[in-house]
Amino acid sequence: MPLKTIAPNTTGEKKILLLKPRGFCAGVVRAIDVVKIALGAYGAPIYVRKEIVHNKHVVDELREMGAVFVEELAEVPDNGRAIFSAHGVSPEVRRQGKARGLQIIDATCPLVTKVHLEAVKFAREGYSMVLIGHKNHDEVIGTLGEAPDKMVLVESVEDVDSLEVPDPTKIAYLTQTTLSLDETTHIVARLVERFPLIQSPKSQDICYATENRQTAVKGVASHCDVLLVVGSENSSNSRRLVEVGHNYGVQAYLVNDWAQVELEWLVDAITVGVTAGASAPEHLVQQIIESLQLIGYSNLEEVEMIEEDVRFSLPPELGAVAAQFVSITR
Image (cartoon, rainbow, N blue to C red; front, side):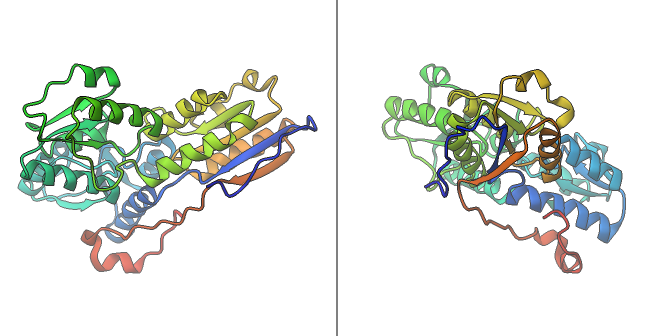
């Protein structure tokens, strides 16, 4: 249930609605902490396979600190130290790391790991699986790798309509953690319609942060003329926030930072909503707030729609060194 009811803006005063929760989720905080702690404990270079999280500003900051981002483990020197991103990897990538003698630190989000474990369980029990997600997303690639011969990807209801499975009585579905709740509901409904015996995860795969940020957008959409979503273009959960905004009747834009905001978007906007995807740093949100205030949006209201207080422990590979460092991303 929403924590706050928003009063209509009847004064005509330019206003900012700052959504809460927004920005970093627990999995992103953990992943960034892992890189910073590893750099502090072991020194540069620390290699990171893929972007640690999908945000340009975060990646650039960590690169300046000494992190080296690579596409594949083949680019990491023998016996080097490498970090897996928050999006997870396939078992094949893990085997490559072990064969190379690399010192691996796994920053996979625990909620992504949950989906991987579900895939392993269903595969072991003889199920074929449908993975709902977006093709070529890092998380999807890793999950598909858990059971490549038993899992098929679907992105839409139309994909479900053309789906053929080995045994309709032995089928299960999983989802990418950063999808649109509304879109996924339609796809799942069609799967159930076509395959009544399909098995679901014990609990929802879409992560709490994705759901909460989408719920907050839905709660304020009718009160905003424009919604600015801070996040990078390759951030799935940020793109979904823009889609949710559009679906609920507000003109929404995805921006990396204030430099990407087009002032023409705001010409007729009295109330501007501001939120951020789960991998977007708070300082970028504050930059946008300050810039909006400079052009006349003097009334700022933070709207907390859902309480959020989730933390994840650091990966065991960091061992005792983790205790020597305090998180500096929170």
